[in-house]
Image 1: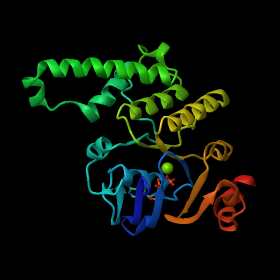
Image 2 (image 1 turned 180 degrees about the horizontal axis):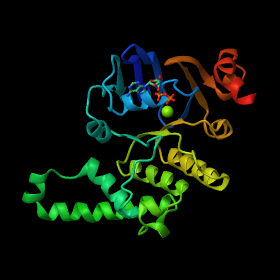
Image 3 (image 1 turned 60 degrees about the horizontal axis):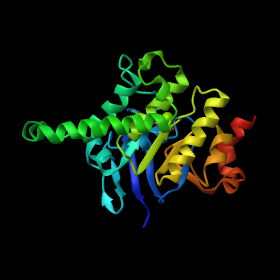
Length: 254
Ligand SMILES: Nc1ncnc2c1ncn2[C@@H]1O[C@H](COP(=O)(O)OP(=O)(O)O)[C@@H](O)[C@H]1O
Ligand SMILES: [Mg+2]
C-alpha cells in the first residue's frame, strides 16, 4: 500500500480548477519531485494534502486512513508536515523559540492536562527543548539558536522553516520550493539534509524549480500542468517526455 493515496482530487477556485481529477500514490521513504510551470497547482496540492483546503472532489488517505476533511493541526498530528513557499516564521522570536513553537502547535498537552498533571507538562517541556536542540543541530543551525529569526540570512530562514516542520515529527514532509534564494553552497547543504531526512525514514515530496537539484535528489517525478498530471516517471523518462518539454522544460532550456 502507498503511504499517501490521492484519488480523483480536485480543488476549484470559482471557475478555475487549480487541481483537477488527480490520482497519485506516494511511496514509503521516497523523495518525489513535483514539478510544473507557475500556476500548475503544486502549492494548492500541498494546501489540500495538509488540510488548509477541503478538496472540491476526491480524497487523500495516509496509510489507508482518510485525512482530507480534517483540520491542518489534526493532519499534522497524523504525521504530515510542510514548509511554505513564503517562509512563515515568528520573525521577532529566536531561532530556538521558533522550533519550540513548532512543537506546541502540534503536540502540546491540552490545557486541562497541564492543570491536572503539572509534572507531565514540565517533563514534556524539557523533552521538547531537547528535541528542538537536536533538530537545530541536525540542520546546522545550533550556533544561531539565540539569534532572532528576522536577523538570519534568507537561506537560513528557509532552513529554519524546515526545522519548524520537523518539530511535528512528520512521516511525510512537503517541501515547497525549499531552495529559493539559496546560494550554491546553501543549496548543496540543504540537498544533503533532505537526503539524510529520507535516510531517517521520512518520505518527502519536493516542489522545486531548480531542475538540476530535483534530478539529483529524486528517483521519481510527477509533472502538473493546469492542475492535471501530464507525466509521471523516472527522471530520465520525464526529461525525454514530449508533453513535459512543451509544457515546461522547453521554456526553461530556451
Ligand atoms: N486561494 C486561491 N484563490 C483563488 N485562486 C487560487 C488560490 N490559490 C491558488 N489559486 C490559483 O490556482 C492556480 C494554481 O496555483 P498554485 O497552486 O499556487 O500553483 P503553483 O504552486 O504550481 O505555482 C493558479 O491559477 C492560482 O491563481
Ligand atoms: Mg507554488
